[in-house]
Image (tube, rainbow, N blue to C red):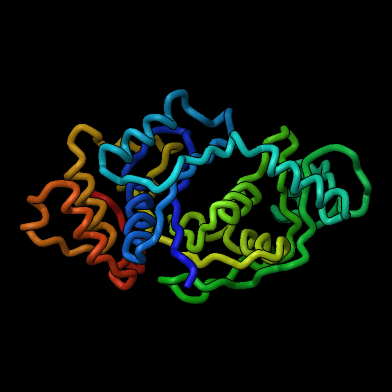
Length: 287
């Protein structure tokens, strides 16, 4: 059997907050419960959104919570040549093309790109990949069959932006393939791009990974905890309270004897007792 390989792939747009701790723990426990590797990748694709010092702050937080990764940390900023090589190959064989449509023009078509520039032979602009392997649904390990929005299924999506930055969907799939990732565990806010990513696996003729989407941590106003919403950074000086809180959010019923243990023993107990079935179906709200 193929060895399980999971990963946690934060973007350095700010320090880890409770929601990202939930994602880190969910992917960590799933990997270790399957006797696999847990990788860390820094998805530094978008410099304008990055916060100085955030990468080291993220890694420092993982160390403080004793979430030790396997192998070396991978940085997407060091892999641009690989993304460009794949794009060049697709441009050369006609599977990708340049597009100059503006957001305003796309909004006039209901917010979805209708293929306007597909056959124009343009030589500059954003680069789109022709959708030749549309995905209408996929299997989530917790939620079962998930249907993809009909408007997204056949859309030629951007793989390199007009400003020269590489698109998330392309980079994440190429990196997961290169790192041998077998399952992606992440927050439910990333369900929507899953269909496009599976399409990329099929276009690249690579075996697909499995997916597990975790419940989202929300604030009291019903907004997702995120760096964009100024979520509070987790405490790296006193990590146990947030660790236990995040584990309970993920459905653990933690005995008092374990709550009083050190971080290493708590995490070991979590790996031994992790079950996908314990995850709540509904999105929960943090206090």
